[in-house]
Image (cartoon, rainbow, N blue to C red):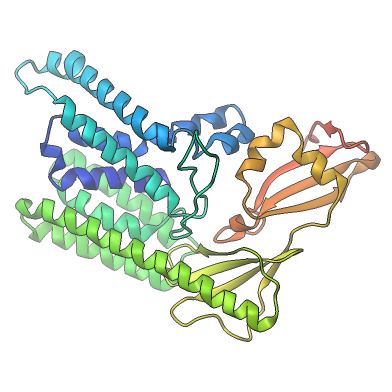
Length: 371
């Protein structure tokens, strides 16, 4: 998931009462919930390095042990050398609760990342295997709403908190209301929900906030469970449709779409194509609907030459439903366009492009043309 969902997950955990276990508890949970995305720094080097390392080593089993311990040690250092020097009379942070909170917050990250179609390599560095939940779209406003409700009720007790939440509510509302991919009914529900949260902030006493946070986490867990079940139902429905129509199907995977819990775009892999079937898993696919088609790409020596390049090995590890297009270029050169069918779901047309490679007539790499 994106950083806001991870941050709200850590903050919501804190508001259940965990923030009272030790000083720096809330900071530890919020930082831990985002810590696995340290690998995002790979983008500073190259997209290919990021594709090769993202959602791998810092998300896998070894990181579950190492990174929470390092974070707890860092927070104890901050407590001793910064916080208590400024406030000598305050109680010290406690090591064991900090370590437990760091582990809890950290584990929330790979769990949320597993839920979308990008996947996560949970066994790194022992195995490079990808795990895909195909449950939530990468940006899910309903998860924001559930987790953020408890945090908003607690953090708007100060002027700084009010200012933060006005800015956050305005930003997320712009993303939801003015996003052409979000249906009209979802925009209305979003705005009504914000009004309900504002009323709850006025009415609910402060003592109810931990219960609200626990309720928000339970609601989020129920929502995730229903979304997971919906994806599996959609896959079975499309598998039955494929058998009915005589499609010789390989992998079938349901891709969540933005802000519509009951809708999926199900990718059906055939020998030469990907068929994209739109499904409302409550009602099932329409028997007379025609799927969208993405060509997987005819075999061509330029494709294998591109995939063998050292500069494309990270991209190669990231691909799940690859599609290749070879376009003749000037002077006998070849342009290889690499796409992934899952990134055509819930995004503007053409967003599925992952990489482009220009090869000469002997299939050696050329520098990209200056645009």
